[in-house]
Length: 127
Ligand SMILES: [Zn+2]
Image (tube, rainbow, N blue to C red; front, side, top):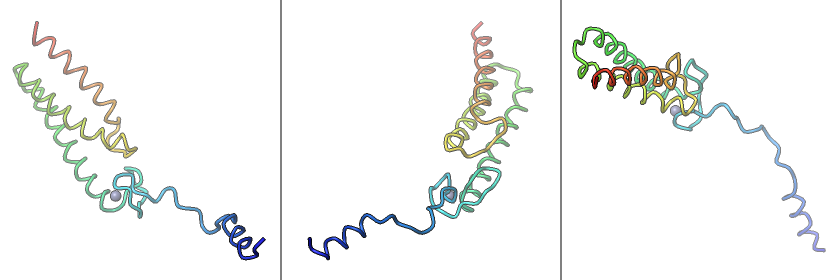
């Protein structure tokens, strides 16, 4: 056997050593590295800032709409508010799908609750 060939084969068979690839440093949102641990999960600083601002704004819209709902006299107006709320929660749910924490209870739970309340109202509206 050619000695050069044998040495090449042993090199190929050797296990690669060195540090194990990091498993928690990838940003859950953009997939790049440099993620930091935070209340939202593991995000890079840029995504952390952007998502925190978006979540804050959507939560604010949800709270405002829930307040408006109580003062809204007509069912069509209330349904419009619920649709606005549901759109915000659905947008937050995309983060939940990637294990990024946004609201507590999580968006999927809120969506179920809010959808049920909207359905009750919609049925009343048709009665
Ligand atoms: Zn990121």
